[in-house]
Image (cartoon, rainbow, N blue to C red; front, side, top):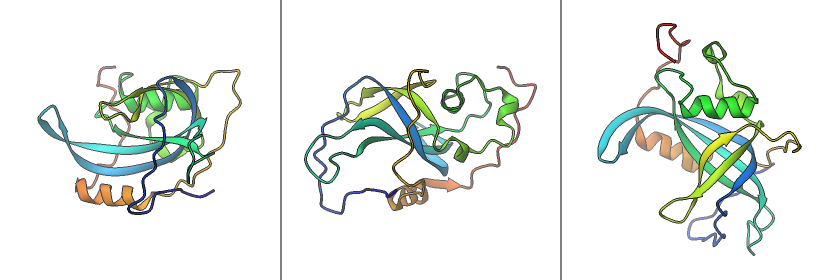
Length: 181
């Protein structure tokens, strides 16, 4: 396994992954800590984790990435409580192939998701790039795939984590039984 990346000044010129539903494997999970978040002009601080998904579709364009899988990165907020609408809960449930409960998130480690297969529905951003819109459990007829990339945090992700870090992420404790689900 190896991580592939562009060198400074290189352009990938890769055709955008078409909008569809694909099999994917999680090949990276990196804690970005507390990051400033600006959504529609509202600034907040959120604990974020970045996941890398290898899509089971290979790049056909000529160049350094020909024959490699498409990859999509997605930042997910760590929820204040683990309700079923939280993106991390949806992702983990799809990757584990079952609905997870709040007890499943006691001492939960996102690294356990690396190597897990799931289905991802993709869309296109306003900038023309592929994005993940939703997660679902891997279809029974599909054989799991293994990650081709190493799970180490790429240098540019480390730089992003450091550049936007507001403070250390709080230690996640087991969900409080008094919180509504």
